[in-house]
Image (cartoon, rainbow, N blue to C red):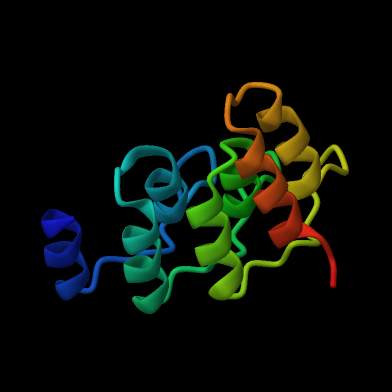
Length: 119
């Protein structure tokens, strides 16, 4: 996270997109151990919490597929749109269904569903 802080202090473009149209938030949700802290750091620096990649997937969808309750909660708290759909018409709840088949933490699936449900 120290390297990221240095880059942000140098005004790195947090919304720069890779060839797959992913931003730094996509990397944060996929790679770092303290994802919630990194997500907050990037959003505070101006990262678009609702950015979608080439397939139309959002960071919230990826967090849902990982059944990562802390990341889902952090992203929703920062304004992630639970209603976004990818190119196939699938949203975060659909990604959660995929992810829960791969997790051995059924309680996390229940918590994630509650966070993603429209209220």
